[in-house]
Every structure is written in C-alpha cells, then in structure tokens.
Amino acid sequence: MSRLDLKTVLGWVPTGSRVLDLGCGDGRFLQRLRDERGVIGVGVDIDPDKLVAAVGKGLDVIQEDINDGLRCFTTNRFDVVVLAHALQELTHPHVALQRMVDIAHEAIVSFPNFGHWSCRLHLGIKGKMPMSRAMPFHWYDTPNIHFCTVRDFESLCSALDIDIIERATIAGSAQNALGKWLPNLFASSAIYRIRRSGG
Image (cartoon, rainbow, N blue to C red; front, top):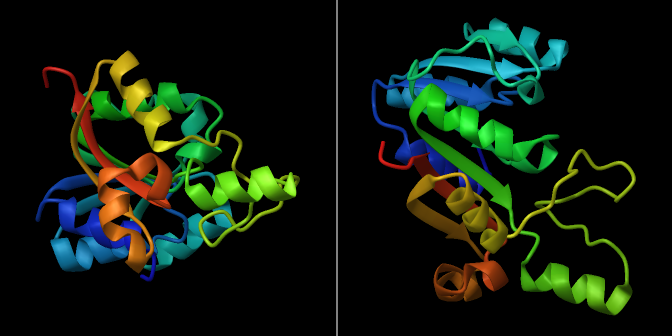
C-alpha cells in the first residue's frame, strides 16, 4: 500500500469497527483493514472483475453504482464509510457525501487537490490540463469528472451541514509544513474525517 492517503485512513479507522469501503476495487485496502484493524468490512464497487478478485480475498462485497445513492444501506449501519480518491469520479459527489454521513457515524474522504500550485502553474504556463502521480490521466480518458480543491470541499461540507472532525494533507517533503498550513495551495492530496452536523 504505497498511497499515503491510505496510510492515514488506516490509522483513522477504529479497531473492530464496522466499515463500508466505497469504490473498494479488488479489495486490497479492505483486506488490510480486516487484517490489521480487525474491522467488519463490506466493499462496494461497480466493476465485476474487481469484485471477483475481492471475493477471492474472502471479503464481503456488493456490486452497486455509488451514483445511485447507496439505497441498500440503512441509516447508521456502519461506524465508518471510506471513500478514498474516488470523490472526483462521482456524478453527484454532494449526494454521495450526504448519504455517507447518514449511513455511518462518520466518513473518511480523500481526494487529489486540483488547487495545488503545480496544477495551477501547469495550466497557467502550458495551457493544458495537468497530469501527475495523483491524476495520471489525459483530460479525454480520465475517470475524474469533478475536480475540486481543498477550499471547494470544505465549502461543500459547510453547505451540506457536515462537520469536519479532522484534516490531514499530503505534500512533498519540502512542503509538509506549507501543506498543513496552506493546504489549498501546497497539498497534493487531502484526507478528511467528517460527520453529520450535530452527530
């Protein structure tokens, strides 16, 4: 597990908790949550081949399109819902966030920060959509359809009456302090713990 956002998520998930992993893919991260944190986990993905791989790891998974509203899950069924680097791929990310904080006591969301200085510089100088390790696709073949910044995400949470419990950022080694204090400009990715306001 080389992605730094997943290391942060792993540390935030309570031991023995009930976890829903949205966009679980082949189940590698859900397997790690089960093995290292003792979680009771369920994964959701739309790709049947990835789900077969997840089942092969002994995981409980469901084939469902997150964009359809996660109707098969009841309120407060889970302790934590995880959506790691998939928010920008959703048709209606605001609807997904609302459902996530209804389904679980809290949610953990990570996403690449499109407000990072390198993205701004690349677009400003080259006049082309940037590509990076966090966003390694061309504009025409990317699964990412809603790029957002740290500031965008926090504004959306405020508008949806969602409280931010904790924020972590990922930045280059020379920018760690700047990524923490000026995340919209210097964080390449951001990770949030959120919950329904008053929850």
